[in-house]
Image (cartoon, rainbow over all chains, first blue to last red; front, side, top):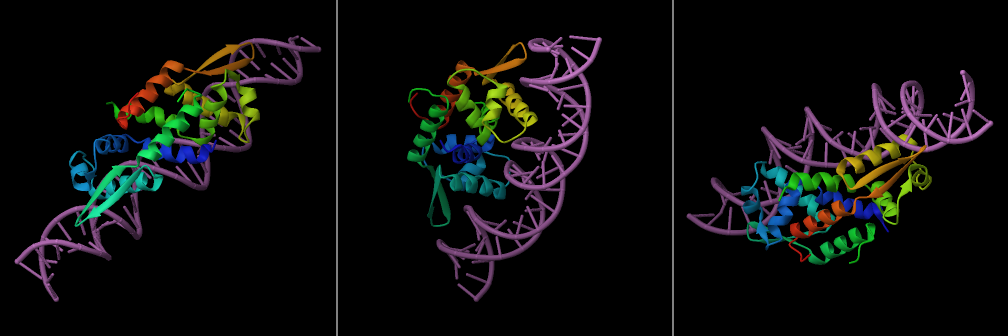
Length: 92
Length: 92
DNA sequence: CCTCCAGATAGATATTCATCTATGCATAAT
DNA sequence: ATTATGCATAGATGAATATCTATCTGGAGG
């Protein structure tokens, strides 16, 4: 088990605003402006959070004209959930 | 969804040494000295990590003589896994 | 071209966190 | 009683992080 790699993904997820972002895009891809509407922080802060999520591999970005659309990388999330179950030795 | 509460549990888990500790005690309770043997850090650092895990609610401690035994709080971990699945809108 | 707009980047700041050394406290062994 | 042992606490330090303001970039439309 690669604990360091798993912890990096977890740390990317383990922030309240990013958890809410993930929950938002879990129902389908969203553009940055639409995500930003739901939060009080500034645009650079959103840009930072999206970069953290993308760098971790669990979110991907698609550019269409002026807009950037974000969505979950389902395989990465499945792998993550499997690893978490292995940590706790739960049946998967 | 209480994103702040969930993020606090995740942040407690999302550290490589603590992930390994959780994996160790998932196979049955362990005393601090036994856990410490597996790591390079000092005893106060282990004490810190165990406090973080206990404060998050996913680990509990039992004292027997000079030794402290740590084990997982299974219900808390089940709840945590369920919440993570809800974030990603996976079937649980 | 020029301007506007979506988003990224740069740099600063305050907070959190992982780690250490030193020490305290309770219990076991002598 | 005294000593040794297992673990917690206190305090310090360096690294990481979430946020902001200010600025840059790249594409769309006039």
